[in-house]
Length: 125
Image 1 (cartoon, rainbow, N blue to C red):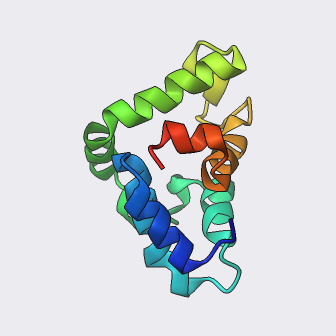
Image 2: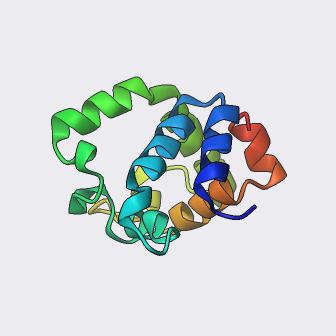
Image 3: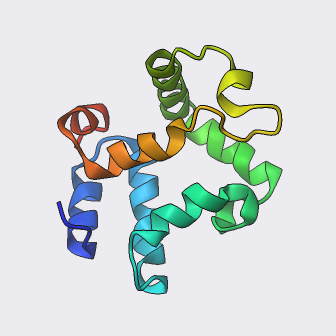
């Protein structure tokens, strides 16, 4: 599927996952700021929220509220990651400073946005 604004809007409309809908809204909001639309995803993956790239997730209070709102979806993703990587401690996955050691996040996100059949089932698309 080609990365177009129309397709992103269709994916958002078809999704039943609240977290996925939130991510699609973020992509739609950022769309005009990027000439290469893939950089919307690459910037977050490369720099992380700690860089301020996602302005709504800069402060601890914001990240806490985000987690509380999407707790079930986030925990499902974490559990799935633990089972798929064989890493069952957060330290193994994220390291001492919160830096991903297993490098699952870029692969995971690529799978999510490429919308393979497994991702379609997982995210209700």
